[in-house]
Length: 223
Image 1 (cartoon, rainbow, N blue to C red):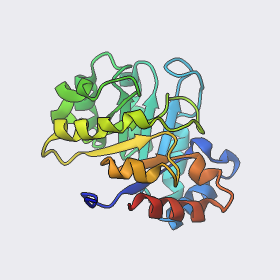
Image 2: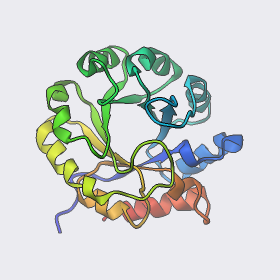
Image 3: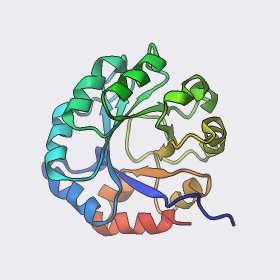
């Protein structure tokens, strides 16, 4: 079996966290070796739920040194880029399905000094990213239909990762996968070529506790 191109990292997705104890929960993922904190922002329009805004990102910035990765699951994401960059996001992804002008939005993100990315739904082909390659720092592949934590992993999305890698060519962009990631599915995602695995329930709802669950998931990802 061919080894991974680079170590696979874990993003701790706070969607499944206890928000009454969010600071301690995030610190536990840091002790467990998470590489970033993944923040799902939902507006009740692009996806059914409404989650959180920039004030949570600001609060997280005060309690962790981990990079904050903001995933905008919102209509008209262009309206929200600056506020999340100012709040302390290190990277921001919006959905190609939601942006009116994804090329302009990515260019704007780069002027804000954050990593610029796009997310694609399970039904969206990776070729939708082809016109944007020169502006991409990362791509987030959804392995569930966006909106809710705890959904079952969709393995049919895995071939997208290789197609994205071919599109990106030599560009030093990373590929993340988000949805249904667990110790059982992490090896599949890692062996398909994902660089970062975003996990919510597998970390924050695990019976062994957040820190131990993060360590276990990291080990599973290093296939």
